[in-house]
Image (cartoon, rainbow, N blue to C red; front, side):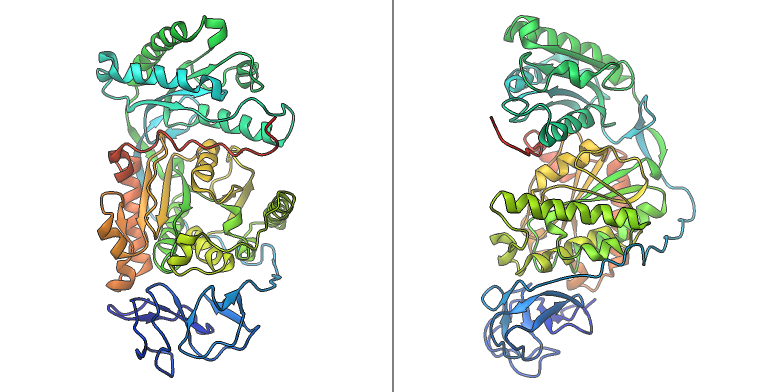
Length: 508
């Protein structure tokens, strides 16, 4: 890491670009570059450390992030005007670098809610889950009425009522991949340990039938589960009244739950990044990776996702796979995505978003290499489809889109009871029933949006704080959040609009 007040950083000895750590003016002299800058370079952006020929690979992190689209002189700004995607084929070397991490000394615990199925929640909400868009308004009506009721205020150990509404559940095939994905997502939310009780509300005539979701047994372990359809119950008003009565009854049982010490092995943390910038792969992402390693060493589980945003860096994960089978499962998801985007008129070799580019990122390869850093160094223990229940402890991968709310939805459905979210541009969101802990990649954005950010990782650059030290701080913060300390997004009330199931297939 750079010395405090350094103006550039070279991330790997083999890199032919350096990163600006401050806005640099034309003519500035900076380390690693033999000539003055030929033009201004914004903070977080790349500078050619030497002359680059057209077609030459550009290296950051010691990895290819693209190729020069024109001759680039030393000291020039390197970005989308002169850097593009390059052909890239990687040696996946499955399971060739899967050294286990040493177990942590001493048992660490957090205070959580032990559920009937043995899992542990970090929050204690009542949920109103909907099978279809058509029952969404009624679910919200029930939640709004409950929030105004004195009986809910009297339940001092219940965190609130969360309506889980969405835009699908009908107008879809009942047998294809899209149906199966939504089915897993709804079942996963019903079973998430951060819910102390679930009320499932359907319309009655939808494709995603309530009876199918419930199945032959209970959708949720334990008895704190109810379900109904609006058509069978007698319409809107009757359903609201019935729903309130059921919630009140379930609330009494949920309120009896108490936090108790639980081992770190009962934590499952979704790792996310959104609104990335040129600092993401230098500060917050590797620091979260260090925290992830600490959690894994204590027996916990961390989930990396967003498949379009690991594209071009997947070889770094396959090499850490615990077996060839696990590595090949990840590559199978990559191939699925290549086909999925092609048949929908898209491509995987896409540039980052406009906000990402303003922050200094140019190609998806560059973004992916920084995004993978969130996963630390632990062996890749498993690969899962979207919303598939995670049954392996350690560092795992869950396939998802790069769209943050959708990706987090899948992680929560898979069992995450906490989300850690890095951002360089300033993403604002929350994901009830799961707390979301926000990591700012740079100190300037943290100062500007401190009410939304939980920790400043920019001091890795501005003050020379080590990635390992920041990782330990994040680890301790996550334990406090898991034990009940509210995050900034929770204090602001986020989480009521971020349930976004992945819609795959035709809307009919």
